[in-house]
Image (cartoon, rainbow, N blue to C red):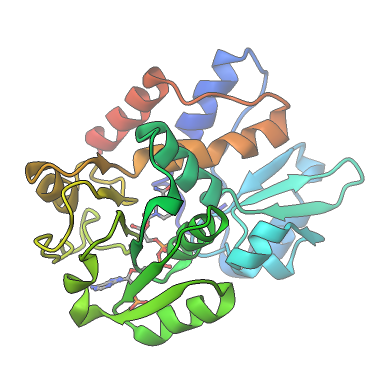
Length: 271
Ligand SMILES: NC(=O)c1ccc[n+]([C@@H]2O[C@H](COP(=O)([O-])OP(=O)(O)OC[C@H]3O[C@@H](n4cnc5c(N)ncnc54)[C@H](OP(=O)(O)O)[C@@H]3O)[C@@H](O)[C@H]2O)c1
């Protein structure tokens, strides 16, 4: 459910797994206006659904509309997955932190959050999931850089832990000695300006992860790749965040395979 929702790659992704596992099911896009969300959620079970995903602008509003919110979703302050339980109750979860972590682990198996400071750019919904995942993995320091400093301060206050809020104007200097940089702003996305970031202070060993996945190769990733940093794109996070949802709805834990990645990546190029 989203408004708009036509851009979503999730039907392709879940459709791939349904076919692969021979499950007779469908994953449909439901365009739902914000004022219709509560009714749409309550009507899911009667329409035979096992649950749904939520995307913009419903993730925060749904927190107050489901019967149970799991601890991760409560901490992140957003629900991206709804499960209809056996007793008919609606359970809200958030799988973005899982997706972020699993993608990094799959792409850079030697990486551990504990190895050094992380710079996170952005303080929106996605940044909250990234920060929560890093804190859970015992990151020693998070340098949180955002255009609106008050949004970053609110995120730091909500999640706690070793977070230093840094002014947007100091973003390039904040890279000094970092082990990981994550772009969790919308900059670099198709239709948005590129992220203006000088990488000179960043160690060449630091991993650069852009969670923007359209385009797959963002200007940030190209720049980092050219200077020899290991890079991780955002598509893997999208694919991995879908796994726990699929498992909860259909009872099978699916894998992220090269064939799946290729199918979804091709759809990004096609649009
Ligand atoms: N790979 C994945 O699975 C995945 C999952 C979720 C999201 N994403 C991507 O992550 C990005 C952020 O998503 P979101 O849901 O967190 O969005 P959001 O809640 O709207 O947050 C947007 C963030 O970008 C910053 N920003 C926007 N325009 C800016 C500009 N011109 N200059 C500087 N900063 C700017 C905002 O700063 P302010 O606070 O100052 O407004 C905010 O920190 C999107 O591109 C989305 O597609 C990817």
